[in-house]
Picture 1 (spheres, rainbow, N blue to C red):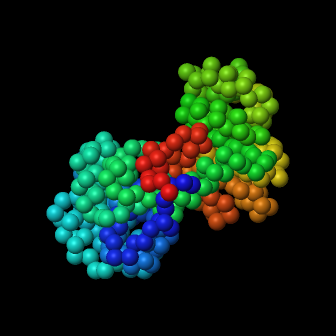
Picture 2 (tube, one colour):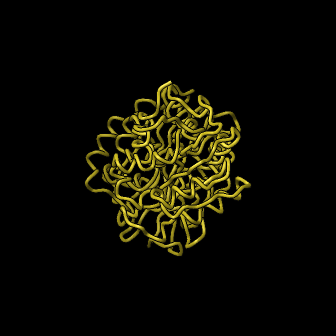
Picture 3 (tube, helix red, strand yellow):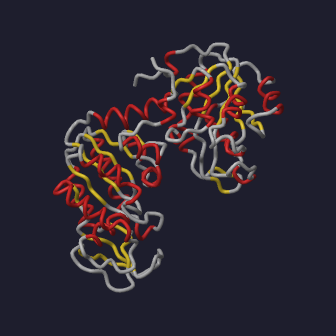
Length: 395
């Protein structure tokens, strides 16, 4: 990448402001999934090794819409991060103001502090210049390592980059290298797998990938809309009726490049305990039934298609994997990717639910790269320029 990174600067004796992505799921005071916290540790340690005066961490959590929402506080994150770093992490109950200023001033040399949720202030999502300037007072150098928000022009990423020297952290650099560089010049065969609920949210990425990939394998709820566009009765399955014409156009454009499931696991209710069975994809669904996963024949077909691939990108689950009865397709594809990684393929899982599924399957360490950003990874796959990346200093 032609943007400056933490490798290009010295942080010795400096106050460093670091935008991280600690938008993690919480269950009351407990962090349910600390993947994004762990992903930030290499950049944090890289900076601390140089002996900065202090390290000030900023993040958002959820969508409080400019209000202080106690259940969206970042307070539970600080002790989890402290465990990974093996050092104290202070916590300030606001991200600006005298309280935060005084806590930052009181930090010991190379002390670490996590500031409260930036989205408790309306100026964050509005990229308000005054709010950005208040955040900028905390540090002398700004490091952006929050790939998950790189597609948003907010005050704590783009705004800060406009008023401070701004460079990419190690995670942001890694995300760009995998998702952008790899996609621009992939080793072939280059395969993509797209799932998730809806076609409409992935029209641009489908069109972009069709021009690049050797095969595009489809699963999840979005497959239902393609089947309905072909005239199949999908009964109670999730189908985007407003996207049927788009689906027909995509199928016509794709030709043999786009593959749909050849069987599906259907159920008589959206429930883990529902009666379910395998149905050939050529058949209409019985009245009252719905498709909730790809079937075993599709898993086998997709495994054969992916065998020997050099580059594989996966975004979106193959079914309702949150229910064990309908997780076989998603976990099966995760196993296929792990196997292809072991054979030398570069495998990239693009954030969101598919990343969570790989973690649940216990295969995260057998994938080349798991993105920390859902929307941001999709926009990079589409070939879009991310605002937070564009705002960083050029080399």
